[in-house]
Amino acid sequence: MDLVLLSLAGLGVLYLIISFAVRFGIDSSKQVRSLRKELHEIKKQLKDIESSTKE
Image 1 (cartoon, rainbow, N blue to C red):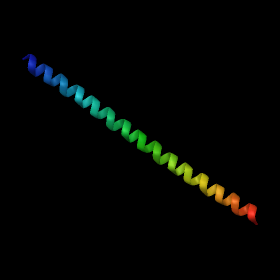
Image 2: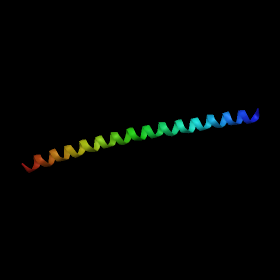
Image 3: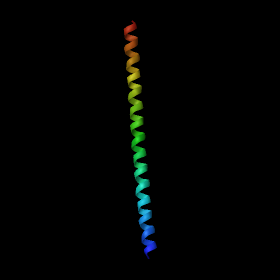
Image 4: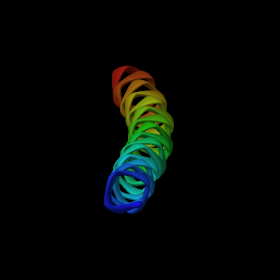
């Protein structure tokens, strides 16, 4: 009986670790996509400024 409870507790802990890792990974990928989009916008603005100063 103790072995069953211990294995259930182990599976519960394993589930919590995996769910936390997946959630953290998804949050990180969203932040990376957001930063890339923002960097792309900044580069676009810099090109616009550069082209307007050459004229």
